Image 1 (cartoon, rainbow, N blue to C red):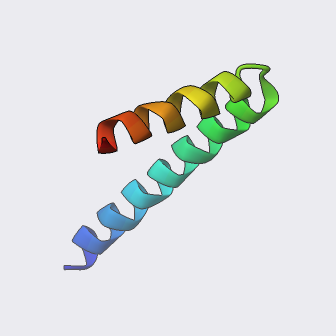
Image 2: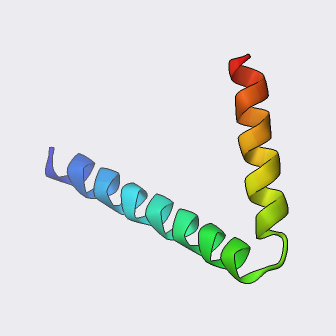
Amino acid sequence: METKNKVYISMLLILILVIMTFLFFYGKSDNNVIYKGSFVQEYINLKG
């Protein structure tokens, strides 16, 4: 049980790290406007 919890926590930390890195790089680049626009637009299109 304890080992399963440790694996879960470590996976969660890795996921957070990946997301933070992704957001950091997109925030620094000039593509962040394109990123926001296209992703929001795609999301709205998918929701119909």
